[in-house]
Image 1: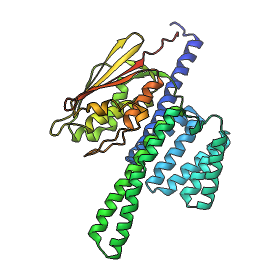
Image 2: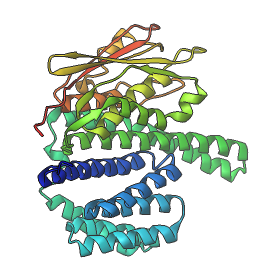
Image 3: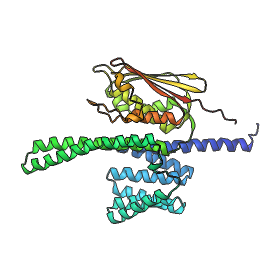
Image 4: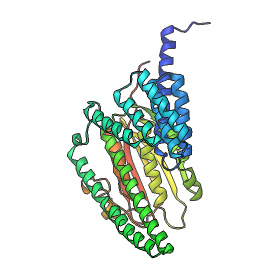
Length: 372
């Protein structure tokens, strides 16, 4: 029996550990994305992340997992479990001497969950100051001018739902005085829709800013696995709307798994939402290699895009192109897709005609070969 060199065994273990760390980080990111809408499911991902991070003995991942579990449990009103998770996160941050911001985050969430608003505010202010002083976390003022212009457009868009909330709150107050229950329900419904729109805008804006701040690790990402994850995330809407998603063997690209999931999620979701009436959505994903890049094409049989909107969809200087109707959109999704592709020096473009479906194209780099 041939003896395997110790160095080879050690290298294999290192690669295995790196893959497990990436997978654990992805569980946390995936759970965070569905935290507000599918909290129970996100709790499962956070639990998987904690189990994996404890096995890997990775203090930062253990801390993040406990913090994420705390948020999920608090959202489900499992206060005792949330407090336990935050206490554990605090203990990890202190014993493993993580960054001071980690300790402050744990203390802030701990007091906030306990309902101790005075201490929560104190640690929130301390955390804000610590993050401002941290050289590893750039401020929004460091963003390029086109991004600042984009943010200005989004903040301007937030004025409309805020105005709607003010109007309907005034009407609601009058209907309560008149004991008009039916009108109150209508006004509350309009107010809730406006609040959801603000949350959606803020979430998209946060994702867009983080694309400038985060330097995601590059790795060989298998797009077949990414599509499978996206299909699982969109499982309910895919089944209820009888969506057909077809793809051949897709390539590995040099990117980041989480960002690729975000990119494909947005494109596939748009293809489903902007379907033709009474026609089941069909989505075809294909690819071809051109020199050192892969050209990915995502085709759908949906409503298509007007020529006027098409010229503005990927242009940050115009701000988000909003849509109305059954599925009103903030217009941020495709701009986020463009920023993700730009991050890897790729290109993204759209071919579409009104009523004839849409083809979204983008290029991503072929993974670099490594010498083992």
